[in-house]
Amino acid sequence: MSTPSPRGETDEARRPQIPARLRRAIAEQQRSSEILIGWVQLAVVCAFAVLYALSPKPYVAEPVLAPEPWVLGIYVAFTLGRLWLAHRRSLPEWLLHLSVVVDMGLLLGLIWSIHIKYAQPASFYLKVPTLLYVFIFIALRALRFEVRYVLMAGGVAAAGWLLMVWYVVSVDPANPMVTRDYVQYMTSNSVLLGAEFDKVISIVLVTAILAVAIARARKLMVRAVVDQAAAIELSRFVPDAVVAQVTAADERVEVGQGEQREATVLFTDIEGFTTLSEEVSPSELIAILNAYFAVVTEPLERHGGVINQFQGDAILATFNLPSALPDHAAAALAAALEIRERLDARTFGNGIRLRSRVGINTGPVIGGLVGTSGRLGYTVHGDAVNLAARLEALNKEMGTRILVSARTAELAGAERFGLRALGTVQIRGRRQSVSIFTPDPEAG
Image 1 (tube, rainbow, N blue to C red):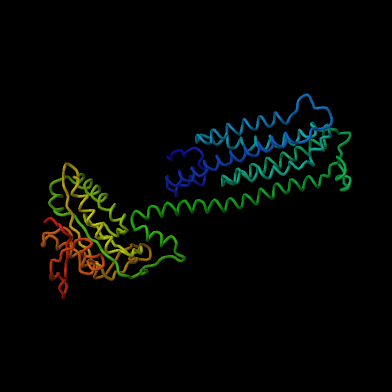
Image 2 (cartoon, rainbow, N blue to C red):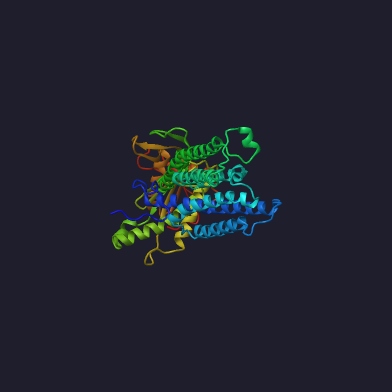
């Protein structure tokens, strides 16, 4: 069985292929639209009231019951109540339909009352320019991006105007006041049925055009909500900079697309993680890992690093790729030092202290999309990446916690960070020895 949809959701928003969180987002957009509609309607009724107050009164005696103040008063009360419910997010669907009928009915009632105000035949109200407000009321329903409300407003307006024309020609059977003479129609209170039908046709056509436009716009709105949610979800799995590039790309991204530049690579993992995983339960281990990642990723991202991968307890981050960062070597070192400081200052789980090992290297790196045409992932490749991983592992042999390559030390500034040269070492898998540095003071 399907669960009832939240109040105010539309048929399109209830389609099963749209996730519940997106249906809620679309419904929230509609509720915001109802608030906007309410405020616009209140502005319109206030404009009516001002025009009524400023308009010259008829020279004939005022009727005992002046209809305009009553109609305006009812409309103000209805609009304020509807606006209050909209702000409370408690507008029932039946009231939305009723409001369309009430809005149009009150407007047509206001137009109808004009012939009483001026003591004229009923045909007098057919020529007042207030009819133009009908189109405003129809257009107001477009703010909700739902075709049915526009069609309903246009249908009520067209039917209401036909009813008002029928009233004119039937109120006095002895004198229907119908003419075929356009000049007589323009210079008297006569009724030209063709002109009235033109008004109805205009209402129907405007309604139809708005309905088509809204149907197309609503598809775009739903697609935009889905795409935005997808981009937000995507940013949880790949770097934000990559998401921005993908969403802003003029063409669909494909496998192999990427860029190469000199970048600083930081590789870090937890010292003694294997022993830790044996001492705590799996659920505790996951909780400790999540807390650890939260501590480590914050300084990495704040210093401009982009986290490319989480590999077990390890983190691979790049500086200057995919996002440009001029002082990338110094930023990586500053992030590493802050990570060390943060870990030294706190415990995890049941009083467990964690220490991380960090390897940092600068060199040519290529970052791009790998995988298949149906499934892509972003990663970085190059000898500079491998060396950063080797330096991280070398910390165990050197009794250090942070090891930096010569190129990183050169760009960041050895004196600036108090880097101490540890000489050259032979890295496994490399022909040439590597000069390494570590920041002072460094605990073993």
